Image 1 (cartoon, helix red, strand yellow):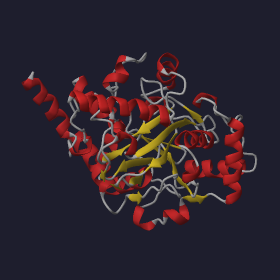
Image 2: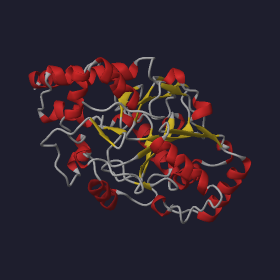
Image 3: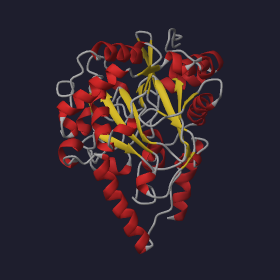
Length: 387
């Protein structure tokens, strides 16, 4: 049987005051140091912003302490109090990357090769987007296994809603160990994985795994989770059939995560930066109301950070890896493509063209489509009938 997890990584949302236990508020001295680093950094492109080019001489010990909190503490750090109103969107992006570089190395997030992702609803403008570019709420998940830390900066908040909802994997693990150890054993056995359609077209690695990858693994008292959308893709597009026990195990895990006993909501203020341990913290998003013009919509900047100093993830629990991430970056990334000013200008032009042509797409809200993993197989069978 898996061992029970102990320590600060085990927490329940209602029992945590994140403002006291998970938040670092910028001091005036830290803001001044970051401002000086930005000026020295200049107009560098994203890959050129590193800990060596974005120098924070006195914040270094603070950042190392916070990185330790991500690995062996609560697994969550929210940095608040940076004066967003003083800086352009592009300057905020560079500041964000510079701070993230103190924790780890950015890796590309999709076949497009971007090192800095934009989490914004563009599903009515661009076809075949991944979940982070669709609107509404999100179900609990872990981002790609190529990164150790996933970070979000709030560049622009929604009209209403859109809180970050997080949950401790260790707490869910212990709860299932107590109530349904049979289902926990199924999660340790794992599921097949498959790349998203567009990522698959541009990948060097196999499109789909030929074996199950553990949903949970454990080493040195730490539990690691692999709960990405790649499980659903394998069922819907790769022909994998989940057994009733596998469906029940996945659904029970999600049910626990969605219960008020476990999750914690964080409301983002503009300029906030959230860092999560991408192995031990699952994240979701509450529903929200947004603006119509793309340039005014809820806009989060995302970083995937690899931390060479951390213990390596178990080899059998890696699906998305550094090989594809480097390949995507080298092949498809173009200079300065992630800067918000350029990104939003291109999307605004596309949106306006679609409006003129009357080809605006139906917005996508994927979170409400599949209340149960059983629905993945039902959707696959329905697609066969339609074909």
